[in-house]
Length: 372
Image (tube, rainbow, N blue to C red; front, side, top):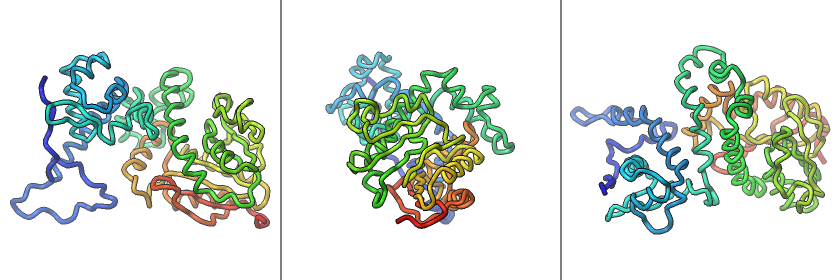
């Protein structure tokens, strides 16, 4: 077997630091090689790295690798791959810290490769698959065109909007999307439940809340709380089993099928809007306006989002911002842009707080009397 062990990255080959927090600094002294060229070469091959992560996730390499290091041949047998080619894939991934090679040439887990395991509590397997689905490779080359125009690249390519395409033409991709969103929501639900102060709230509504993991976590933590989950009919139909008929929280939960961009037929003391205000601006405005129209005076509205600023995850959020631009004509928000949209809808923003290193909560009130 050919060894795939690689040397530790040098200063010239290491991945560039996030320029949002680690500026490049002054030009190198005369005679000292610049870091710019190797960094740019690595950057333009980013698609190869994304494809390699996708391949490992699709093959199930991380799931096949146990606690003990294994040979490439053993892994190839386990995932039905050609050994020499699997070795090349693992060589590329090991350079990025996804898997590692031991002194005797076996493959071992790293902190990142464990995140590709389906059974990992903080698994990113389906997130990695979702962000590299086949249609993504069609839209990325349209980025320059998208920057020049006001059209949506995905709609131009497929002749229909993203979610219609997903459910009509790419059912397997839709299933990956559901798994990815379920994983992401489940991982943040407990943190959000610990973060939220629900003093004075008897009714909470999770707007566009997916399968309702956040709502379920809140109801579990607060035995006197009642809650409503509003999302599209096909989403609500597959809500968290804890919320559905026969579930332990069903007596305190209401499942409402609907589109928050059209109407929000729900009254509550607290409305939670998490990671959905990233559509086109008009959809975002309609959703916020519908909350204000439905809510009682003084009701609390909590908007939770990843931000383009004031975040340690700007490499991710700025990339996701471009992903949204291409595929749904949407955007990730900065603190200012989100406050502006909330204020234009008539909400009074009362505070901004980090939920965790990646999510921020924008607390606000509906106009009218102050809540008791």
